[in-house]
Every structure is written in structure tokens, then in C-alpha cells.
Length: 112
Image 1 (tube, rainbow, N blue to C red):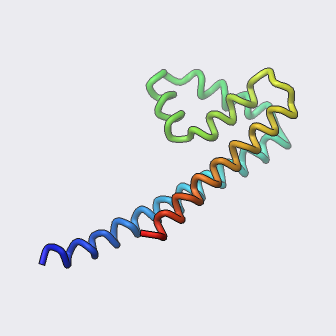
Image 2: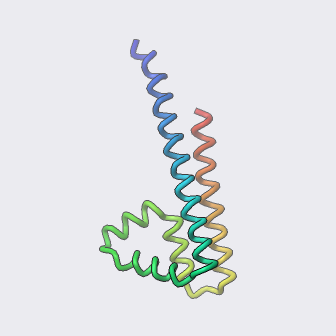
């Protein structure tokens, strides 16, 4: 009897994981699109966002870095003194890495 309940529970968890993964993909897609829009039209806002993040209490800053790691790294890259072409190429790589990571999680969940 317990084994028959387990597959249903497993399907429910898989569905929840899939919904969460799709939600995360949408959130990061929106964040990266917003990043690109601000990068094109108002780069000063990226500077302001970086300063806001850096001015937070350390514990809160750490939490936001953990939750939004690709975006936070993107802000850090943009604030670097690297050549603009290197920063843009690095940002493109981070966006591609984010998309690949999320896509691979979705594929793994579908295989379960």
C-alpha cells in the first residue's frame, strides 16, 4: 500500500519541481532582458543597482548574491575595469550559461 502512494507523491514532487524550474527560468529571462534594456538605454542605472547591492547589510547582500548569482555576477562584470568588448562577451557567456543550466534542469526533470 505504501509503495502505491509513493509514485503519486513522486509525480507531485516532480510537478512542483518542474513548476519551480519554469518559474525560475521566467524570472531569470525577465531579469536578463531588463539588464539588457538598461544596458542599452541607461547604463547609469546598472551603476546605481550595483551600488545599492553593495550598500546592503552584508548578510542581506549575501542572500541576494545567492538568489540572483548570475545577475549579481553580471553587475560585478559590468562594474569591472575590463574593456567593454570583454565585459559584453562575458555577460553574453553568463546569459548563455544561465539559459543552459535552467534548460538542463528542465530536461532532467522531464526524464524522471
